[in-house]
Length: 322
Image (cartoon, rainbow, N blue to C red):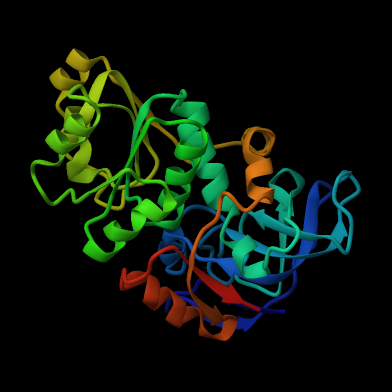
């Protein structure tokens, strides 16, 4: 099969053997694959075991038709249209665990479906399970113009947040955050942004921050938080290390929570998927949770798709079409 694989030269498209499903896995004929920031490192073999292994396909999410299921898979059948996540989506065929294989809503295109799995699971886990969002609370999404960030704005609004704030350092992208549920869009290059957030929240600060930037924003995030606030660290686009004001953290009694899929077991990921589907799948089926497709590329142009992502000129998702 044709696939885009990690190599010492970066991402290359070549023929590789198709995967075979294990007893708990679903084999899919991939029609579209969504790009994620982690794929840029994986293409250079610099991510984590499996995703970024030289000679193997990369790609964390995809959509397509079920070809075969393992003997321990009960709820998915060959011929069904699904979207899934795992490793190896930049290929004509990919496998995912049954717990990460989701039914495609009626009327949804393969491109739209391929953009959703990672964002849905990541943000429901961050906002609802770890962030403990309650109706009536104020929320800030750092890095809100990313695909995952845009999903966070929508889930926060869906679950009854009284105030939803998103950040982006790009003026054009900030102007579009309101389309996805933001009441206020901030530019974190403005040193007064924590004061802006506190003022919008009534003077005290937000109850919950989901942070995909980290780095130098760590202390300013705590300044923007209310007493007993929660900060969920999802990504580190702005850097993995920075100064940390331990006294401010203690004074505000902030819960600072780190999350990643890299150290989770198969069973833990299945539970994340189960909770997400039980809570918000009706909204997905109704089209209330969506992501804009910035641009599509054929699989043969996967390298160009990565270049487009590295340029940071996109809004929403970049998708490969098979």
